[in-house]
Image (cartoon, rainbow, N blue to C red):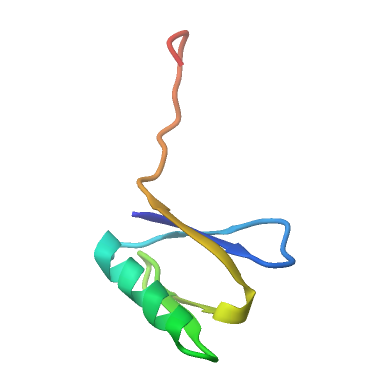
Length: 74
């Protein structure tokens, strides 16, 4: 699953490929946002941890990675 994280003050978003289920990612985001000094803690598909302070969190978008299209029907 692909997770896009918008960070306040950053021109680009963080894109993480994770093997976690969507419900698990949503639960992690909710837990981090509810904490007053929370940190969003996600693990990507290669086992690396990504930590984002919730004070800088702008948005989180969940979805499947888009596949590149080739040809005239694209």
